[in-house]
Length: 605
Ligand code: AGP
Image 1 (cartoon, rainbow, N blue to C red):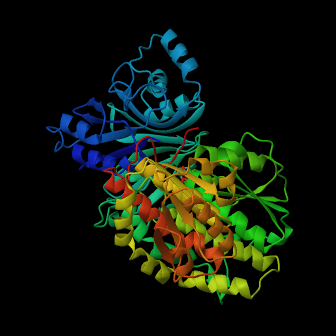
Image 2 (image 1 turned 180 degrees about the vertical axis):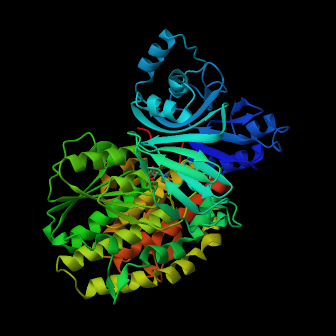
Image 3 (image 1 turned 90 degrees about the horizontal axis):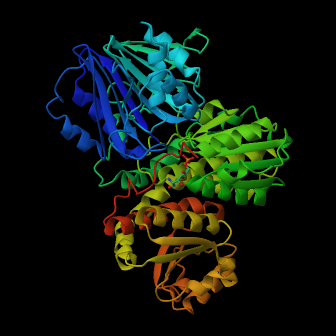
């Protein structure tokens, strides 16, 4: 996923744009570049590698005032990561510069057409066709040229365009990739998300698919493809810059784990009334009319969805199906108007999940989305969006957003239980405990140093087996994903009952087991599985409940959480599995915020 920044202002310096671009590093990238108008000319600088490389290449220009500038972090989709393929891309005249996030699906046809007209291409990217298309359409009005050019584009794009003849404007357009505009009297700032904007302003406009925006100093006009001018709502983002900085921790990931007590409170706020669940966003939905629920999600969000399946199926008469989005979208799912589809996506931009809800919608399903990003694409394609309200999650590994998803899903599940007439004392206890969880989490987070000591003992292993049953199964999957994606240790998450069907052949003294084994309704079954692993000489870390002396006699290492209703163990155990993965990764010398090969949001297939 690429990152875009653009600023138009009398006071902007080259360094301001570069510093804003750095706020987007978390999205993952392989090269970066900047273009600006100075002295009536477009200057373009770009380089493969980190933004620091680019910054060093233009250190004499950093304090120079520029009239308008755009910058970009590239996560390659077409063309190798190198200086030439880095954005911005220019047209033949060098008067137009473009930055782009997305994929132009018909770029080959467009390139052939443009080359036949005499255009000379420099890069292997799809993006460059946009610069030449605008050049072809330009006859003095940049906005008009961009409007005409984008009509020829198939696929997804968020673009920023500048022209040396127009040193006081940026033209922006979006279709399928996010774009946000920050508003201030003396400047307008364009970005892929709010993180680079909040240092300048907290008043923003989220562009919608098909919008074309005209940014001038302190003024923004938004138009639809048909030329109609529209008033996009200005939203106030209450994140200050610190919320997007590390807050004193070594890594965003640790900061975000430590935010989890507050995240639970934020996810609950405004969704409890007179001692009952009351989610305003779903007040109009009659859950008693629904025959089936389908959930679609990827990665960590899929593990949260799996928890919801266990929870709602166990406590109601509803069928709940869960599928990873990349499979759901190519199946022939049985979805109709009586099916509720719930999409879970913290970024709200995951391509496979977006396509899955589009499929479900075409089949007649209503769509509820649970997401963390105000104004994200998924919110505009869903009937209802329940915001996770977690604040920006910068670390690539999902941590606090997983906690927020589980919290929202517990509330939504309780709402459904309430509406479908299954509410009982047990649900009261779950609800009451959930409301108390922020302080329970604070006590669990105090274990971080103890977990770091344990991580020292296990950081040298090449393999790990995470096992769980029932509500412990999603926890096992999530624990394995966290470990593998930031420490690069091979970690498998498995239903404990499946071990004897093959995976137990893997176990020996070099293959430790992380067992999710709370004293819940499946404890005895889990205990037997732990014994099986022990018998193969595997070292055992048991994540269990306090004062469980029984398992202490079997496991090598005990990690514990307070006893709660078993539906809450996935939530209560999440900081432990996250902290373990975090400390192992850091002890192995990795940067947990920017794991190799991964991006924060997978906006391409
Ligand atoms: C989880 O740590 C990963 N970052 C990844 O699996 C992520 O959960 C997945 O890509 C889904 O992202 P989304 O919630 O933004 O859709």
